[in-house]
Image (cartoon, rainbow, N blue to C red; front, side, top):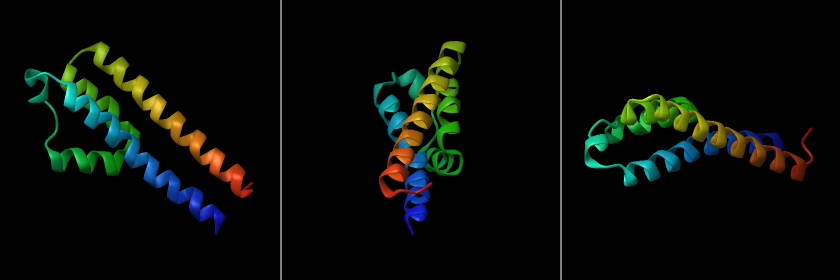
Length: 97
């Protein structure tokens, strides 16, 4: 049963972290870059289907530069690292090998 909790946490974090990162970025974007962003349905579909891989795509799509790619890859790596640490912490706390 405890393995199921770790897997459930993985599913939740792999959707929630990209959602929060992209939503925060959308709130800060100027109008010219905001018009290049996904609409709400496409955004939610990308986050649920691709998880952290949707973050670099968002940053490249809105910035259209290598700096956007670097920023997106950095945020994606951070999201994967946070998710992995939370999963490892829960697995350790529950005694899952």
